[in-house]
Length: 189
Image 1 (tube, rainbow, N blue to C red):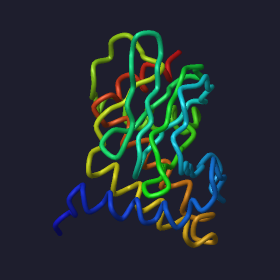
Image 2 (spheres, helix red, strand yellow; image 1 turned 30 degrees about the vertical axis):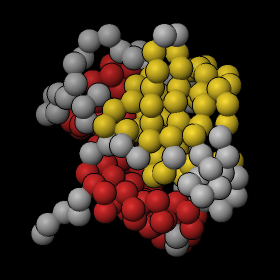
Image 3 (cartoon, rainbow, N blue to C red; image 1 turned 180 degrees about the vertical axis):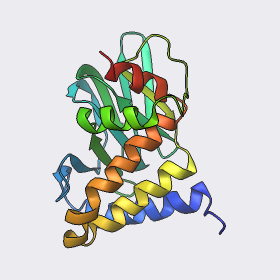
């Protein structure tokens, strides 16, 4: 079976997010810890507090600022916060191209369980100093899993049954990704 390319998957993600995130701001879903985000205008740089989570953007762009570091998350890069963190954030969006994103809370219980099951089988990233925040390139497997979560959310009954398992898979994909070592190290704190 051939996998769809990242651009095709992103178009599907953006379409699903557009149909699910119908109101401005952050919207909860029937899956605990999963929220949809929509902004139809630019939001200037402002102080925010994010809980540990994964933010995957289908369209638009956000930038987070922590000290002298800038973290860009958009259709090509996702954001992971491994600890609660106050930082500054700005949003690039317009009525024609609104920001459309999904935010997934990192469940420390699920994270710990996955790490025990992985037990050294995946050692991605450098297990150096844990970071509280990072943005990294979105790969095809994480993008496809995110699309499956969004497809699931279009059917509330299905989302209640399957949603948490897909969230678990997304957490696993992040752990196996380029910066998984930072999330792994943060779980040990």
